[in-house]
Amino acid sequence: MIKKALMYSFSSKYITLLMQIGTTLILARILTPEHIGLFTIASIITGFAQMFRDFGISEYVIKEKQIDSNNLSSAFTASILIAWPIALCLGLSSPFIADYYSDPSVAPLITILSLNVALSPFGSITMSTLRRQMNFKPISYANIASTAVNSGVSLVLAYYDFGPLSLAIASVLGTVTTVLVMQAFRDKRYKITLRLKGIKSVFLFGSGVGSSNIISYFGENFMDMLIAKAYTVSDLGIVSRAKSTISLFSTAVTEATIPLITPYYANAHHNSNALGQAYLKSTQAILYLAFPFCALMLVAPDTVIMVLYGEQWLPAAEFISILAINFAFHSCSIFYDRCLISLDMPKEYFIFGLFFTLVNICLVLLLIDFGIIYILCGIAVSSAVKLVWSLFSLKALIKLNVSDYFNMATHPIIATIFLLAGLLPYLIYKSGDTLLDFLLLIPGGIAWLIYILLFDPNIKNILAGVRKK
View 1: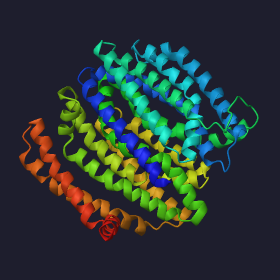
View 2: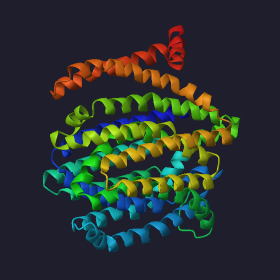
View 3: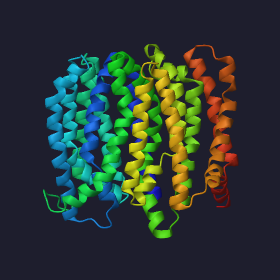
View 4: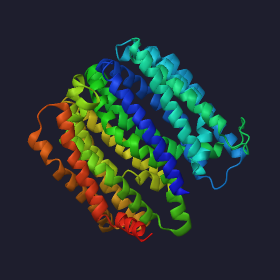
């Protein structure tokens, strides 16, 4: 089942990633940094509201030992009771938020995006049920359809000079598409209606997991909110472009993996008490991809920018290098929070999120006057400390030895060294010609692939089995 789930999850992610990259290639040459900055402000505000809207309800549906029409109805009702008042508050407060950022263009963006919050409950419960069942086929259809609608609408509206409104309208229509697909594939065994009874247990679980999600989101986006105020909207647009470049990895890999990890860890913990091995195995798989990705972004950020976005976005290159270092540290503990959820430890999950959110907020406040580069360096140090925290915590919780962790990371590190060796021609012969420089990056990917195929023990065992057949 896990292999089939992975197939659907990853295939949909790669299809949507290709659509998103294609859309980005065009939009980056139509929309300006100011347009992206304005949309970033609005999306951060409404994204924060989305964290309140979910409030851990999705995780509640997944982790419940048994689900039925009653507890799903309670979860749906809880989601409605949170989402609709929040959506209303967003719409009413949008003029004041626009005044704070001294740009009236922010108000209509927030008002439009608030519709996403109001619509989400109609698809989120069904999606969580499907995730619980490891049935990712309908979710894959929904993701592909939503991305297609989002991409198509944004391109058409941007072409007709709708500016940042094109992104907001496209986002809402993408959400509508997701809801419609989820309703088409919902499990007919469960009749979901409004039900007040039982919502207390939903809120009790959400108070831990949901609060932690909210705090983590605030910490991750506090920097952007402050940059928009302390610097300019265009500066925020440049930083946002750098962050979105690094987040390509999350779109391609992490977002396809995360929905599988919580049930995978839960099964490992409940069935065989092998959570430690499951954690190491899943983290190694991520690091095999994350480390080389970060190395590429560190070595060739300007070439990546030119290929994806064009010359107007070149100032983002210096930010990408530091964000790549930050993401390398983050990847090393990327599943730690999933591990805590699988262990049914919402309190520890909350404390972990709260502590590092406060750390990041303090770093941003302390470094905001020194420049954006210094802020990003501080965030990278915070991610390194987070890795150390997770290692010592896992040693106490699931008896995971630090030495076992570093042994696990050895192969991804060596694979990355192979990639860097393959990038030597790029470093030596880089000319400034975008196409030529891009072609010089290819030997790095080939060197990385050679190491995995020839030296990784897991791949070698698979290939040996294929040869025997």
